[in-house]
Length: 354
Image (cartoon, rainbow, N blue to C red):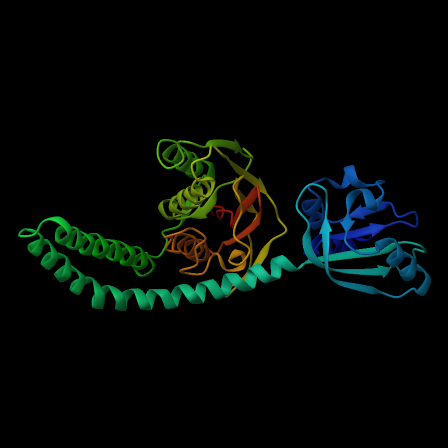
């Protein structure tokens, strides 16, 4: 292939596989390497059915494409690599011009587009929550303070069941105030003061805080890529993100002793379109727990405000996490099945000094 074709192949944002007449992998692009979690050298010459598990009669599809010399589409099929849970994807198979018997397989994971769309909707929902927070703080917190004070004055001359009722008024009023203060975080969050930061330093601080606090009953394992360059974030705000995600993972385990894995790696396949152009998000941070997984009914909306899978949960922690990540031009996603929940944050590299 000439230089242009090389660049085109390397630039494809979705996994692409070149399959020879014997259904053996001849070539894969970088996005496919990332999907397979394997290098192109290790997959060349391997039967495609040993590398990809597609919930569809793929061998018959290859035969039809080769015979008819026309493209074939398969929508909403499950595709797995053996190294990760299957993903829902659209698959296109096409004959290679000038290469008899060779077929090109393009795979477009639907989850990526769906999550990117949800990321934009979450940002809009967070803006609505900000306006609501300002109204609630002004209209509700002051009357609640009066109710709490009145109940405390009444309790001085009461006893028995009557005293229990005033104590209930005070405790519930304080609980509502605490909820409102959490909602206010959306409105009070200052714009990020971004600078070059070593993401592993932030993760170590978050891990140490977690181990002596809310995650003392958990095992936290590190799988860091030491070659990662610095990212470009507000260190305090991103530390809050990591702490919230670790707390979420610890609470998912309940009282049982579970394991949390913190994984970092480099992946160039994700690029987001922003107002100032297209930005690459190659720095990946994954926080993985072995808890029961997210309830299916909320899994698609877990970053929306007031969506929670825990009893008495406010549904604000992950919404705040999503807002902070979005404010840093990053991206957050989640994959969850029973026994494995993965929150993945994609961040930009710090710009080089001139």
